[in-house]
Amino acid sequence: MSVRGHDMDQRFLLACAQAGDERAFRRLVEPYRHALEVHCYRMLGSAHDAEDLAQETLLRAWRALERFEPRAQFQTWLYRIATNACLDELERQPRRPEPVDPFPDRPSDQTASPTYDPAARYAIREGMELALLRAIQELPGRQRAVLIFRDVLGWTAPEVAEVLESTVASVNSALQRARATIDQHLPETTRPAADPDERELLSRYVAAFEHADMDGLVALLREDAILRMPPQPSLAGGLRIAHFFLETVARGDLTRIRHRPTWANGRPAVTIEVRAQDDTWIPHGISVLEIEEGQIAGIDAFLDPTLLPRFGVPAGR
Image 1 (cartoon, rainbow, N blue to C red):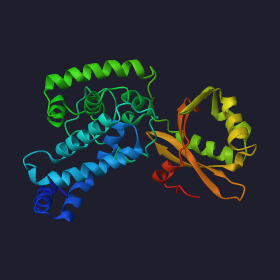
Image 2: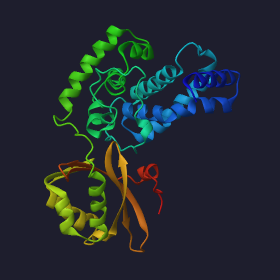
Image 3: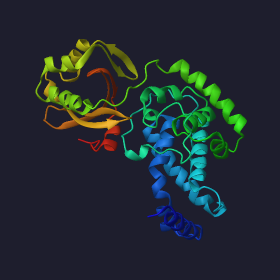
């Protein structure tokens, strides 16, 4: 469909939806649903909360639809509602003690502004990086929104000012303060371009557990690798990490751990299931791998079985 045809179709759906047609409204908002969920995830750092807030956004949009002016940008209007919903949530729970949890990759995560600003500091893919998202959680709500719009999505300052119903000067000031805070909390090293061998390394990681290949697992891990398991303390050292998996998680048998390869937050990842005594597989969590120079430099383990359905694995036994 041409751009003109798409605009005409959207105007028709909008008119029907404003007349009370719920089916037209669902068709109208469906192209934006996932992008709104990703936006809420970046704002809140929680995949569970993001899903709820995306639903809340669409509910608020439906209730306010009759007041929407057709000459305005529908996407901008939806992002304003989503951002306000997130800001309301942050006011209710300003400090989030829980860690950022993983989010499955989809091509539509890379939703930039049609007028993408080259001054944006992070590529869209980097905008899903766990390290950046953790740093974003240190910001006050409106600074989070400004940084995400400006430095991740690449929106211009006037676009952001429109969403936040603010001024360009206020947006620029908030961005300057947000960048200073991010620079304090973000690691100096940034993610390199995607390694074409990442998929192969991911397969070898899965196979090491399938074949109880302890030596192969140790070889995949850098000597200074870090295993992060919030809220538990981190574990340093490739050999220590391998023995932790073998002795603590697998109870002496690596084949008791089953991994399924996937991708999360722009990185290779695995779902985790542990075999019970009755040979059923119990969902355990998600591990996101950090790969540098052909080895695993870090593992972010999220021991929460309720995360698995997002990655295609049932949460129950």
